[in-house]
Length: 150
Image (cartoon, rainbow, N blue to C red; front, side):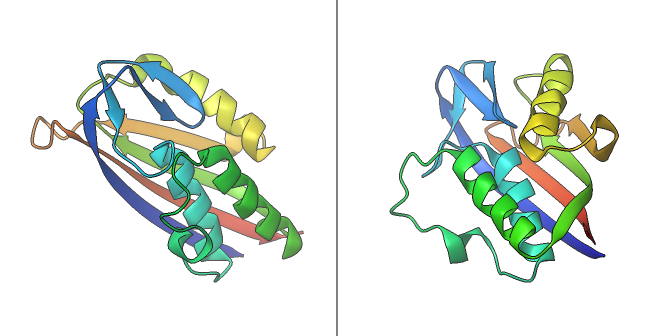
């Protein structure tokens, strides 16, 4: 077994939606990022890469990847996982953002992650909370993964 964790934080700027777990959530902001800004997919990918002992996202992707889809980042992490003969036992993530409210979107996010990760619903947990208006223009995510040898 191997564990990995990751944390990501980005500024929110005016926009039309944010993406979390590959799900577009309509709102009046977007994530300021070099890639498409899906911090949930970033932390899941980096937690996998870290659990494998392969560094962090910056070791695999650089700032020249402007607009890169986070699903491509996740696909690379999953390829590394497969190459090392591991599989996901579980993923546990926490998203911290004041607005938009994520409660109505959590099930869609989880369902999409189950598909992207090719795991059972019981293997994915998504939590959402706020900063209590301490950081209203920031979005954050934490993820922990447990990998098991096939």
